[in-house]
Image 1 (cartoon, rainbow, N blue to C red):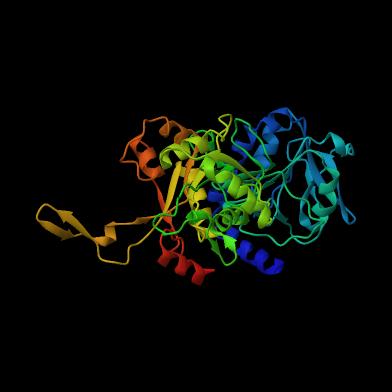
Image 2: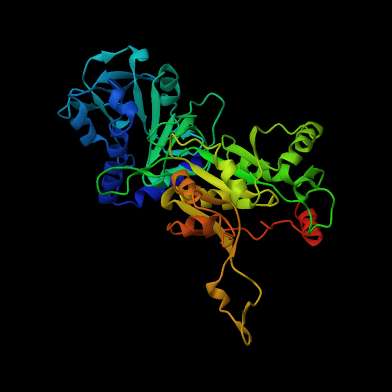
Length: 435
């Protein structure tokens, strides 16, 4: 598995021109320079880049007089660290890699930041090295911030890893992502230890697109249905499918996509006690916060948004509680798009012919110009909160219509046809077949 991935990544990086690598490297390192952690750091571990790695040579020259820069050197089966003194004072060491000639550095606990190369990284902050194990021995000694840096083609869905592998605190890959471990509320829109795909607003880097960061994610699950169209006494979100209430299946879909996502469940006050009893009955332990449902879906979303902090930019997904079959790919693509453009709604092509009613009857519409809209509908927090300051309008049929009314364009992403909204007895039969 690892050797196959290394081979594939090698092919992809070989396909990048030197000019393209230089441009991407400049953007990545420019973004890193803006991080508060970098600005505060005094002792920084770097690497003398190989042709398939983010170019660091100019970066080293730029900063070696202002900060204590360290480079690794092979010593037996381990790496030792030496000061980089500038001027390209290096000599070829083991494996032909250039190594510094400066004095030895042994104060591991004083390393504030480490920029770490790798063959590949994934969105769970895992790293795939070249297979020699040098960084596996080095990284556990470093308590400072560890940042994996790579080209976009080196950031993959999943990297094979073992329990002893050390995760990065950040992964930076232009124009894809910067992922951070754990939770944060920093103004640089970074998050900690979140996984999943790559999003967010750019860290400003001059005229370039900038480095993209994976920011904090929230999912507001709106479940205010009463089951009227289902002809059932039990609200539709609580109807069991394959032995579990629909709402639990829906929430688990987001947790499976990113187990650090913050789930906010919007439920009518009258249903919350029953929901708590269901959680006990089914031993449903996914962490979530409950907000009160409102008079309309618009007001319910408003209530859910109150639980999303204003302090830092984040991404908020709003999803129907009775769409349990949203795919991980659909969620991921929408988060990616929203991180880049501020908005994303999944949609699929209609399969039926469509007609529009007119004063004289009806007329056929060109279905190639139509889309069937789904959820989750995902937006940057700042955009969504501004939109929901508007007064309610009956024209608001979904969150996209609210945001669009506020003047922000809506980006479409690919949905999945199984992502149906379960509202009728027939839908329930389909759901049973899909499980």
